[in-house]
Amino acid sequence: MAVLVIAVGGGLTALILTRNSDDSPPVATSQDPTTSEEPSGSEDPTADEPTPAEETPSFEVVVPYDEVPGSPEEIHEILADNPLTRGSLPTVGSCELPATPASTQSPEEIQAVLDAGGACLNSVWSTASSDRGLPWTSPSIAVYTPPEVPSSASCDPESFDPDSARMCNLDSTLYWPAGSGIGAEIADAENVPGAYLWDLSVAEISTVNWNSSVGIYYVSMLNKIEEQEAEGQDSEAYQEATRRYTLQKLCLGSAASMQVPSAAEPTKAVRTWLTDEASWKDNGLDPASRVHWIQAGLTSGGDLSVCNTWEADADLVA
Image (cartoon, rainbow, N blue to C red; front, top):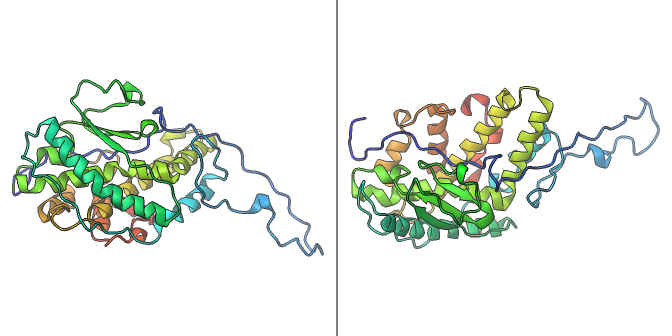
């Protein structure tokens, strides 16, 4: 790809809550409760009132490993109306990112810019969570140098990828491999800090989804889809749910990255690269869909409703 202001090699893999990692809850599943209908013409004055078994489940914060009731369709409805689909994100009044060299940052320099960016983003999400009555635990960030894997991490060592950050929710730590993300490959130092902020903002949505229970509902939805469909993970319903979840993370991360002072946000050059379809490979997400939701987040002004991928038409989550 020709180098204009910034140059990035390869595609960026967005971190998602994977169902096979040790910090992803194997949510228990159950069959939907059956109901009986009153005979036509029943004079029972309560016949038209929904029984508890007929009521659609509503969103509530759940403990990891707890059972989430409802069918895949009902959980989809809950996700379409969860607290992270309403209202706005707060802005951060102060956010200073250290100058960071281009292309050849040391682990110490990466740690410094990520720590500074993390403090800004934690201010956004701690306030947003409090406003919605959701719990929040600010994650710590640990930069490491592949191929070595941090021995203290609670995650399965086999789940680490040298090209993408790994959020271990059980120890509330985001493990960041040096050399990963678009911030590591920027050709102009002016654009590096904001690029790392965007990288980090997207990665930390895993923490947002864990703390808020949105990720628990999503995993439970996948479990129930597998129960219903013999194709399991190869089914279109399963893949569509995964795309909706991943694209919402990209949108929310992009939105949060713009709630900081202009000096710290992704620069115009970085935003131009992020919203160019040619920048992305089709690795399970159509580049056009990826760009659509990144652009929606970057221009949202913090409005969370624009990131509601659960209500979007299928062609926008391809």
